[in-house]
Length: 191
Image (cartoon, rainbow, N blue to C red; front, side, top):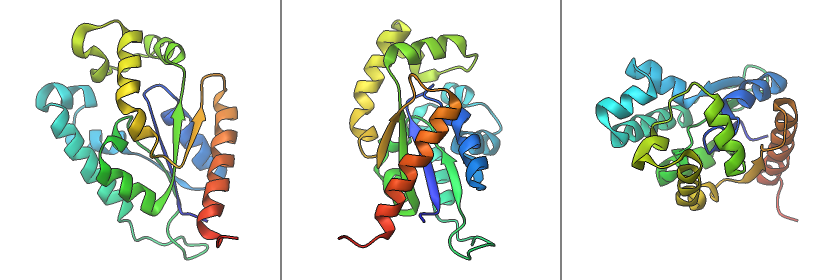
């Protein structure tokens, strides 16, 4: 089976919530790209954007993705590549090099959601979302705008799973099932 399950998608689609659950169910390691960036930078993502700008954040993100996808550790059980669930930030696929690197090591599952659902989740969250404040537009309008800008990048994923009407448990079921189908296609010869 493909050794990495890569979770990506727009903000507030459930990546950080479902990632650890999927990893536990599979018995795999969980790694969150944004958490690694924050640890390396010693400051929050909002502070990185504020102090250094988006270009600097994207450079840090590219470095972390390159590091994670060049991991040569082996699984102690099967001696194949080390299995992981990697959760990425919402803009990771905007960078072609990230997309290529992540596809090389795993199956990319893009979580989606209806804009209204995402807006409600963002409103309830205490997390600062630097991309939503650009332009001073209402949250729902800005979400729709960003989703349209990122549609082609998200289309690069191997599969999309809509999290709008799912509990975290149900979302984990859907993610694992979608991953299994796409991972099997990668290792089975064409019929």
